[in-house]
Amino acid sequence: MRIMRQNFAWAIAYNLIAVPLAAVGWVSPWLAALGMSASSLIVVANALRLK
Image 1 (spheres, rainbow, N blue to C red):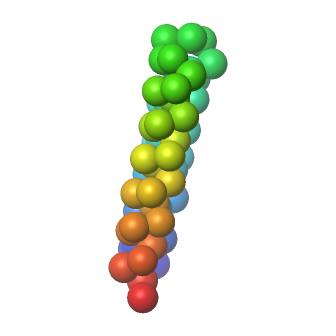
Image 2 (image 1 turned 90 degrees about the vertical axis):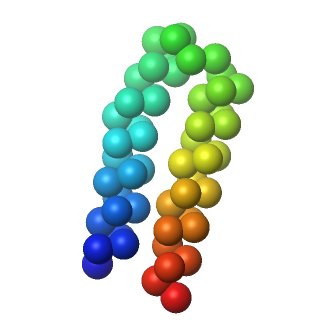
Image 3 (image 1 turned 90 degrees about the horizontal axis):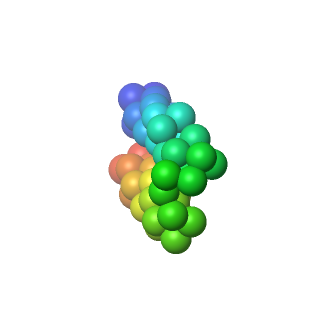
């Protein structure tokens, strides 16, 4: 459960910070896409610890 909570916290924190910045235009589209990909990789790598 701890790892699952970490994944939810990371995803929520990223989306609360990065998505509004990208929507306003303070972050370029390629950087926002790179950040979302990195965030997804972090969540997946953390989830692999469940195994």
